Length: 317
Image 1 (spheres, rainbow, N blue to C red):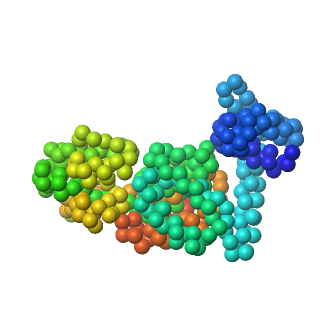
Image 2 (image 1 turned 90 degrees about the vertical axis):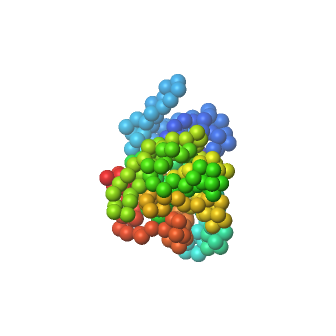
Image 3 (image 1 turned 180 degrees about the vertical axis):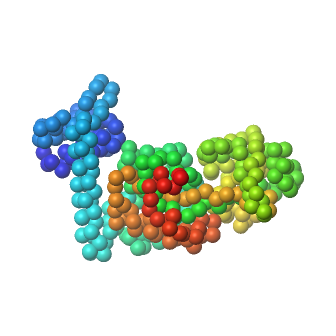
């Protein structure tokens, strides 16, 4: 069997963590995947995995061989894309992950212009408000809103999620509009559970002083789509990125309140798999969206040296 194919199978077994996932990807059986790994071990003359009834782990030789295989496969893909670039055609499948609302509102509407530049690229977009493991899911690039927690990943800052306190005119007519931060605890606040401190809303006043308000309400969700709909239905007040409500703000379905106080923006990053250099198709995709977001006032930021590609551990300091 082709050694390159065996290497690709071995790498995916390591990255997904099990044989069955690789079998599903390759439309084959788990035993066939296991035999390919065994054939590779026989070929190089060393055990790569320590197997048990439920799991497996890398041997010392396996760890070294995995790293070299990953480098070889990345180099091969880059070489293939360089050839396409020389022919003015970057092509291939690009697997992208993003939060649901962000993907619907800010990625999909911009794809037509992206395809006009790169008609040979195929985008597979996975929308999920939960955590997506880039390695296990085979994702090339992911959009992440908020502070990054996974220090293994490599990130590039491409924008900001500017936040505001928002409510519908119907809610404010029924319950009155809060004029001060101290009024918020008396209102029904809609809670987004994707944040670390879900009930604490942070602000800065005109003098630059920080304020944290503990809020509560009868509805919470991990979906920004659900939060948006709840606000539009008049259920309560939200503390959300402005880009979630762009059309609703323009149409008057919601309005910003407590505008004398500034809510801190959230970083918008694209993240890549560890130990992998972004390919030409990834760079083309990221550069396009970075350029597009720089013209969007709800997302744009002043890009400085800290916006360059960096390890997430540097961003968290």
